[in-house]
Length: 410
Image (cartoon, rainbow, N blue to C red):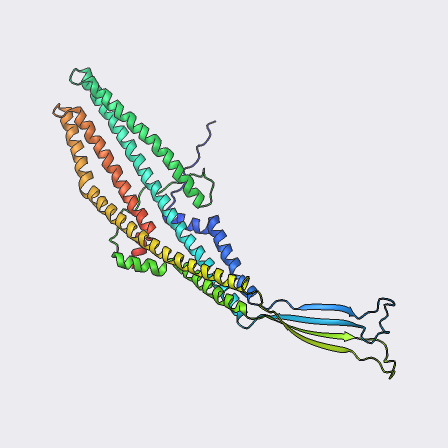
């Protein structure tokens, strides 16, 4: 009994790959969980510290442990509440809110990078599949050339070196095919990882893909769009605001914090002079911290927070420059690749294909040298491969810009 071959996987469209990544990628899930955890911090740090309940026996004589002999002996129940200096809780809460907003934007930036990487990997698979198809087609043609050359050699109208030359080129294509298949396995494993699937899971891409490459807006428009919408930059702005709040909080570190307390003492026994029952006692206290060692503590904290504030601002500026550079470079690469695609599709590939057909007809009637025929076919193979390399490269440049042609539709 013959075992059934495993069914070929259904083609995975780019949109499906993106949706799978957004729903299953573990790194994105971790980033979202971090954002959720950070969102829970603001209510915590913005709340008063827990009150303190105390119970104690006060002025208890150790020789008799009597609760009635001494007038000041009492069982005391106390409650105290720490009160930070006005404004401190609000600043702590503000810093935590900005941290939470930054964490949420971190998750958005991770999501954006995830979609970019999925698109790049997916288009790499498209390129490799098309390149492998071209290799297979050229191998079939070279086998035909070998057959023609062998027939001509057998009847004394060809050269043995023509047969050997065709066989050599066939071996070279086979070698290229081996490398492409290995590269495809690597790209498939990388895409599977982004989709949170086993690296061995097969991925098929559609046989037909959209080959249209839109004309992009000008550089200034793309830069403005990137600076306005990139989560990375919004995140860094939030980090700066959090640093500002912590600097303001460090300045308030020179102000005292307070503690308000109240206690009630339960006494037993009677007054030996008047014979009356001893009354209970009540106490109220207000205490405050004394920022005495400011040179070692508050001054150092303020200097630390100011350095962190400067670091956050410098990082924000650096990120803005990096985003600008990414947009400019990706746009330049896209425009170059788009021009190459148009040139290959409308001119070079059709011309090279016509040349091969013409030279094949000429070779069969001994008007074209076999070496020139082989060179023409290899040139056509290279141009067809370069067309798909340029096309998929252009789509990857769009991914680096955060764009797909459907994103540019009104």
